[in-house]
Length: 202
Ligand SMILES: [Mg+2]
Image (cartoon, rainbow, N blue to C red; front, side, top):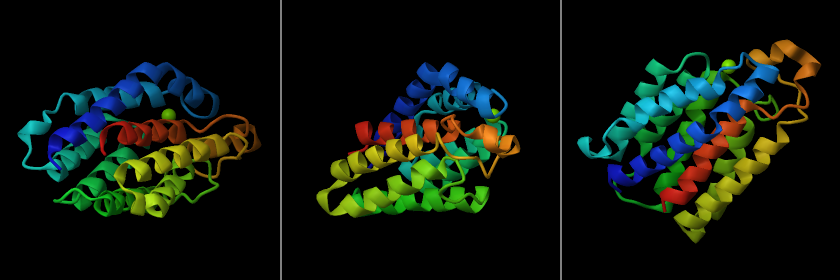
């Protein structure tokens, strides 16, 4: 798989972030510091300005995209999304395969867990991404599109599951019980990332 297809993935994600920046910032206003949409939009605009064709392969492009996010997005989101993309890039398969893409997504999830130390139930992006990767693996035998569709559905379900949770990680955890009732902004944006993958990568 060349860098162009992966470039289409991140371009689609950048568009979702741009269209939903106000909504993401509003979620973050309720349980954080009101910058998730604007931060991610700035970072993804910088990523969208990269030319995928200028890179030797998809892995190199993804690593650069991750580094771009780390250097342009403040707060926790830049390092978490940046780590995700750098790890996905490091594990990206030279030959396209459902298994190879699944392994790359799992490497990205593991990077986020290592970096953020969050577990399922903490009301973070991990609540959406962990079930997405598990659903991908469960459906991998049916091919890339089916696995990505399963991942996107599980991601959205995991995102929805964050609403009643009390945050145990990140800035939202300072609110204690008051963090319950708001959907997690990071789980919301990462679902856009996986839904974009399902539209572009197969
Ligand atoms: Mg924030």
